[in-house]
Amino acid sequence: MYIEVALQEFTTYYHVIKGYSKDTIRRYHDCILNLCKVHRVTTFDEINADIIRTFFYTGRIERQWKSSTFRTYHKTLLVFFRWAVDRHYIASNPVADIEIPRLEKTLPPKLTKQVALTLLESVYNYPYENRFLRCRNHAMFATFLYAGLRKSELLHLRFTDVDLENLTIFVSQGKGAKDRIIPISFTLAQSLRRYADERKRLKKTCPEFFASFNRNMGLTENGLKHLTDDIKGSSNIQFSVHKLRHTFATLMLEGGCDIYSLSKMMGHSDIKTTTIYLAASAEHLRSQMIKHPLNNI
Image 1 (cartoon, rainbow, N blue to C red):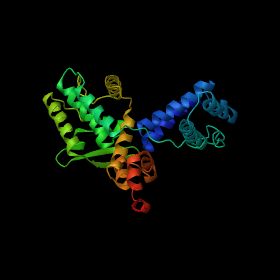
Image 2 (tube, one colour):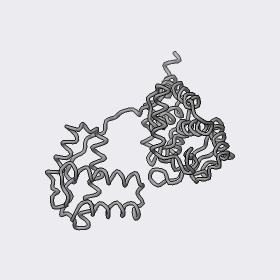
Image 3 (cartoon, one colour):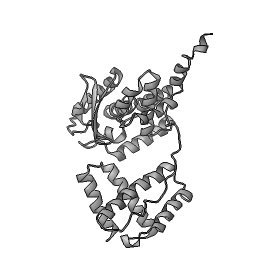
Image 4 (cartoon, rainbow, N blue to C red):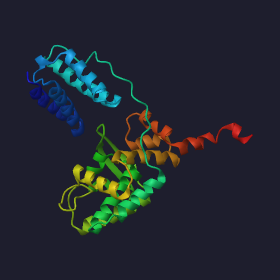
């Protein structure tokens, strides 16, 4: 049985039947094809435990995979070969005995409050060719910083998902196929309203909230990447879209938001995922330290 043929069946099943997202399916596809490319294998008969061990060893030592990368490949291949065993394409799962490394305990990268404000100013004051781009781009970066949306969530945000009257954003089928409602501030609502007015002026009717300038369709992932690169160059601030999400979480804690509410706004399945931001926020920890009873002596 050819692996690429089985891979097509596998990805279709996990997307259509299991309901996995396109990003997850893309990860499965890329990881499995990478294994085939590195070891020049095309059928399941060529796969054995030695090839799998060499693949992970090479990745960890020569390619210097982080623990998170190692674990991503491990989880992906484990699921794929388990599925293949169930369909009798291979006799046993060659990944089953591969041990996984412990995750490095690193703090999520973030911007300070001052740098975040400077970034928003840079986005607004960039020399755009028209007002639509100025309003749209400021609204997008403000949404990242004031609401903590993931990149895919922002790009798939629909016009009907943004309720400026009731100050909410509805995130439909975010990570883990979960819906959630995020309350928004008046500051963010003002930026979104300015953009919505420009969107209406240019007669944009696409279902996506953040529209392309040249076409009546949603902004693409590639378009957002080019925009992010331009802003990084003009502002001299090094950031990623996901770093802006980390910044949102950290600033919320520093402002006094409780961890449970933040977990709901971030769309985390497990509140333990949210607790990492407690360690990332020095101001939050400092505010707790002043409660030490010996400070009053």
